[in-house]
Length: 149
Ligand SMILES: Nc1ncnc2c1ncn2[C@@H]1O[C@H](COP(=O)(O)OP(=O)(O)O)[C@@H](O)[C@H]1O
Ligand SMILES: [Mg+2]
Image 1 (cartoon, rainbow, N blue to C red):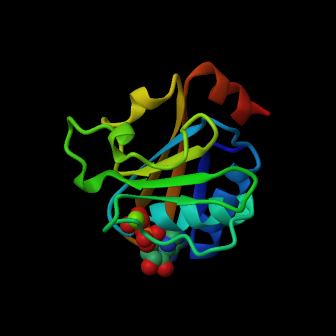
Image 2: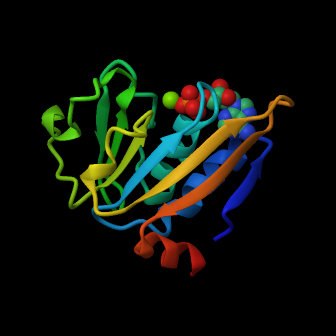
Image 3: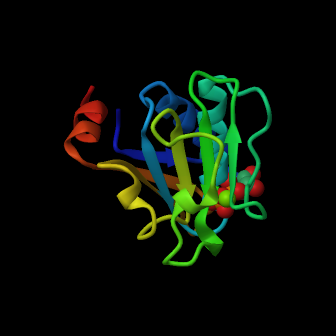
């Protein structure tokens, strides 16, 4: 899988999420970074669609986290924006275990990396011309190998 992506349209961002859905497995952690409007939720929507989740994946800002079932794996979608640095995603008491799910965290950099031995960092950005970009940064040998495949 390519590491750097130009994402001119929202559907390009969703397509990248769908491509990631094909390579994720139980216990995986994806940490999405980037400013407001960069496409973190859009990417998660594509991931959900790729997993086969049928309900809409919307921003969990006001609930911090949602579990979407009905797809190949449960999708745990976390918005860590209002989680304090001491808070732990485990404290959210989600009715899905991280080991059986794929967990995607918006605004989670520096907060949630310890949830898994390794993770994929997805750096989303919004250029001055409004084109979105993504860089996939494997954080661990397993992700390194998977992106090479
Ligand atoms: N290439 C693109 N990728 C993703 N979103 C885009 C793109 N171009 C425009 N947009 C718009 O930008 C917004 C991205 O919102 P969202 O995915 O919620 O961002 P974030 O979760 O990072 O704050 C949406 O309104 C979407 O329609
Ligand atoms: Mg969002």
